[in-house]
Length: 118
Image (cartoon, rainbow, N blue to C red):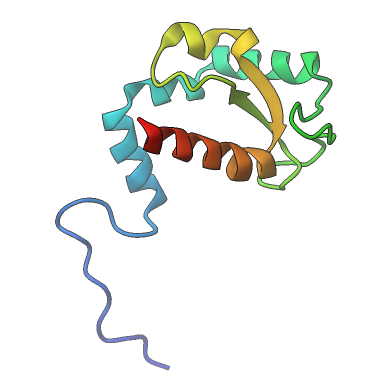
């Protein structure tokens, strides 16, 4: 069987739809603090918060026992969005354990609504 003779063109400007690597790279250029999430320091801090919170979602009380990307996997959420503020980013008192489902649903909706109010 022959494959398609025509394939979608790669965009000349911006990032191709569905190109996660390209989107990450473009976002990193706009927000250099995103590299903080890839550090050992962040990994230690988020694990410290998970242990402090007993791997329990601070919004729902659900145990965060899943493995990423399962809905009940633990996510370290900044209570106050840091937006590149290092003091807020690294403050363990500003970080809470939540499930991925809560983070990707309720919390993202709250943040989008807050952005619209600005």
